[in-house]
Image (cartoon, rainbow, N blue to C red; front, side, top):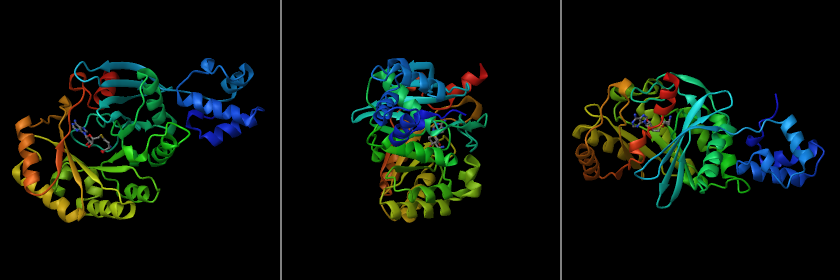
Amino acid sequence: MKPDILGYTLAQCESLAVELGDKKFRGQQLFGWMQKGAPLFEMKNLPAAFREKIAAECDYRLPEIAKKQVSKKDGTVKYLMRMTDGECVESVFMRYEHGNTVCVSCQAGCRMGCKFCASTLRGRARDLTASEILGQIVVIQRDTGERVGGIVMMGIGEPLDNYDNTVKFLRLVSSPEGLNIGLRHISVSTCGLIPGIKKLSEEGLPVTLSISLHAANDARRSSLMPVNNKYPIADLMAACRAYFEKTGRRVSFEYTLISGENDSEADAKALADLLKKGMRGPSHINLIMLNKVTETGFEAPDRKGAERFRSLLESHGMNATIRRRLGSDIDASCGQLRLNNLNE
Ligand code: SAH
């Protein structure tokens, strides 16, 4: 198999150049071009012979934009990205006041089985490689011509179920000679795979860990998220507290509001109590309005209901924000574009 060189570090590109009989600095040039998503023929300062060797000996592949939807409301761009074997995933480009953020996918499909989520409906086809995760950002920067300053791993897939590629990606994308996106501007979102949380806390990567909680008691959480049967709430809270103690990074919690499932007054109080007791330190709750996925049968509460839930949390001493819904006119909730494409 030819090496997949978009996943190479600068040092690996330099060794490659030497192996191919050229100077080390050619590797640096190649690395720089790849991070810009340039095709080989555009790499004008590289000798033609060197480029030919790369083409013959290596696999330089970028995801291809299979579909693109631009929101008329807020400029959010949603991409369906096709990998070389035909698997498609979604990536979203979002503009915020503080800069541009991209939401990336890390698996083609997902095997976690959350009942409200479109990404898991057809299971997991395969993991993405570090190069395929990075490739989504490279392609988006090239397509938009804008710099990406932040990343959320909140697309299709479970980052901690594809642990090695996720960590490799985090190191690559944050490397100063590469895209240099600060780890503090990167969120890794997980449904709560505890061994992965523990391992991640030991990597020395100051990312924001984001936990998809969605319910404050085990019975409800297990009914929405099968992963809770294996890793129940008390253990998850202990793992989050350990993560905070080890890394000094505040853990954030995602809570998708689902009408009649987890949005009552009692639910708000239970959530506040759980986090106050469980985290013993600052934590933040992101409330997400459910994006309706027809197949799941769940409904979102109305805006008023969500506001009420937020102020209840506040009255119990918890900080919460309702996540602004970017790209609501383009179906920007991850998973649906891939699914529609599979069904076509
Ligand atoms: N596997 C990771 C990333 C998933 S997507 C995780 O579980 O955290 C990011 C967030 O969107 C998660 O909190 C997920 O639970 C939530 N989500 C999934 N489907 C949703 C839907 N239909 N509406 C709103 N949020 C959803």
